[in-house]
Amino acid sequence: MSDKPKFVYVIYIASTPDKVFKALTDPKQSARYWFGYEVTSDWKVGAEFALVKDGRRWDTGTVLEYDPPHRLSYSFHPEHDGLENEKPSRVAFDLEEINSQVKLTMTHDDFEAGSQVFPKVQAGWPSILSSLKSLLETGKELPPFWRGDYDKK
Amino acid sequence: MPEFKPRTVYVTYIAATPETVWQALTSSEFTRKYFWDRDIELEPKLGGAFALKLPDGRVNVRGKVIAWDPPRKLSVTWQVEWPEEFRKLPECVVTYEIAQAGDAVRLIMTESHSWNIPEAILSGGRMGWPAILSSLKSLLETGKPLAIQMEPPREMIEAIKKL
Picture (cartoon, rainbow over the protein chains, first blue to last red):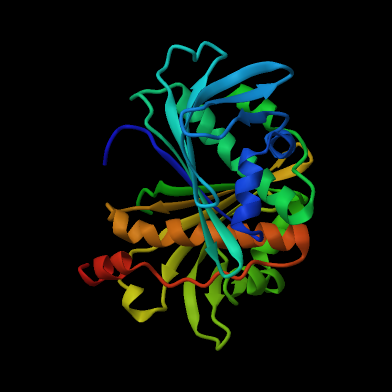
């Protein structure tokens, strides 16, 4: 086992790969399921990526892979809470259609050993992706609670 | 009891009440829909008997209640009886923890083991739990479970043969 942290989260969604991929790249939808954060990018390989809330860029990165509706990845670099000095990590989404549902696999890796960012994203992803699933299946995201959890970690 | 260490953790957030999530985890009316047709038998007390049964009555998993705190925490020991070749797996512990998270509920499933279990065997739970708990979430939020077919991973079956 490598001691470099890696977080893999799998969630199944009653939706189509196109809709899930769209939700991952659409700032209007992400503002709903990602508790106010807009995923902002031109979505071309090499383009900038940012999570924007209240006009501030909280996390930034670069689009690494853009292959709708199968795979999306970007580098991820927090610009807040004293985490700016860590090197960027990597987020990847893999979408697979299974029996008219979508298996979404989120892999967040490429962290420094002893990363401070890792425990925060490990706590955050299940709530974000649970909320994404709720939004796509019911039309309603989860009620906001995540920011509080995030601060406690 | 030997020491059991958490090896697989899955967290999901559900728009429901803790009581509803507890009911979904502990009653057959729900498990049948999201847990691949399994019925649950659970004596509602510490030390009570626990079993998951297939529709034909065969026992899939048998165990005992080792933590009972509705609607917050349930732990059961977990001895696989079917498929037969899985019987030689040492028992593990499965724990559900339910907590209010704003107006939603956070459910944490933890699978703990007392031995140096190979990653290949852990792959079974790591594949299964996201499907089971995604389906539970869908069932509680939309009234409809997911339809996900799965077989135990080949690497798991091979690793169990070698035990």
